[in-house]
Length: 141
Image (cartoon, rainbow, N blue to C red; front, side):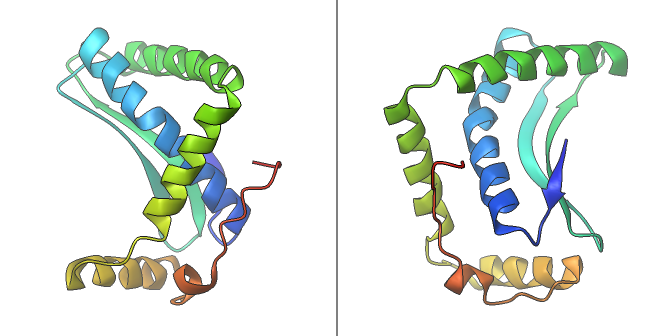
């Protein structure tokens, strides 16, 4: 799913929050309950060189693409209802968890390399974005 441009901090934060909210349920529903395949994951994606940002759900399965797409669409429809009905305190907990994750210190040289390489690969060379980005979760998110 295309969400928007990676250069927009509002898009990045909103997409990251959505990814955080649906990742665990995607695994639980699509892999555990529906048993669509051994590999099921939800993650953000960046289209190299374009700056396009989105979320992807990957399902490795013996079943056909049309069936898998229909099940993923049904899952997303269900998650829309879950998010709309989410209590304020649950939503605040999700936002706080994301903020903690995004402001966490880099632990290894490999992690730092991946961060810098993603900037190089995107073409936006915004190496210090992590240091000056504020995570303002206003009522717009």
